Structure formats: C-alpha cells, structure tokens
Image (cartoon, rainbow, N blue to C red; front, top):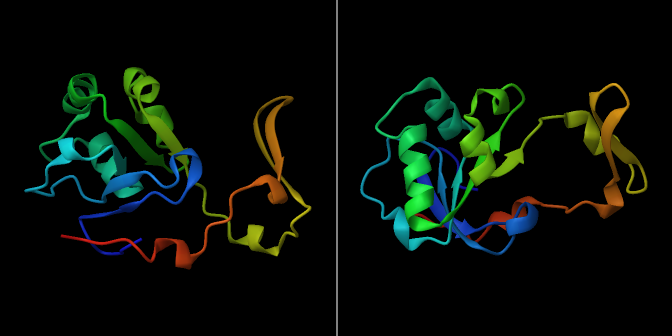
Length: 145
C-alpha cells in the first residue's frame, strides 16, 4: 500500500479478489484517472467516508450508475460504523471489505480463533490458521502513475 497518495495501482493482496489488478482510491477528489480501464476499483476507507459525507464530485448515485454501466467490480473498505451509512443498493452491488483495527490480535497463536458477535447467539468464527496472512512484502508491487 502506498501511503499518502490519492490513488495508486497494484494487485489486490487482501481477501477474495487477491491478484486482481486494482485501482486504489484513497481520496475521491482525484482527477485525471481512467477508472473504466481497471477490472477492480477499491475505495479505501477514507474515500468511503468522503462518499458518506457527500464531499467531492463523486456520490452514491454516480457510483450506482458507474457500476451498472461498466460492470467493474467495486470494493468498499468499511470501518465499524460506516456500513450502516451506505445505501442498501450500493452494499448489494459492491464487495465490502470490513476492516477492524485490533492490535491485540497479533498476540494470538495460529491455532487460536477469532469470533465476531453480531447479535444474540449470532456470530462468525474462524481460526487464524484458516485466514489469509498479508504482510508488508505483499504490497511491494504497488505503483502510481
């Protein structure tokens, strides 16, 4: 990941779209990029927050029409509290990358598990050994133009 840039390019290295050539957008005010040439566009949490706040030229209506017109896969990186603020039709049409910052997780062993509770007796659970491991080395091919 190239920090402090409005956009950059690279192969996705997180989640089910790993290895797909991707345009990463960190700031929706970015100008002069041709989004329609990319198979995957990833809106980082800062850009998603800008969409939620209604800042910039891009908005949910634009994104909805863009998805319908281009059929390009769109990912939205959401931090806790953001997902409920995104229109339902956008949630349906995009890939959501739900991101939680939890530094204590690094203390777990490979055979430990993570449980996410989303209601009484409703949860998701997986062991770390079944999860994808991403390290800084995975981002080494990111580039900007």
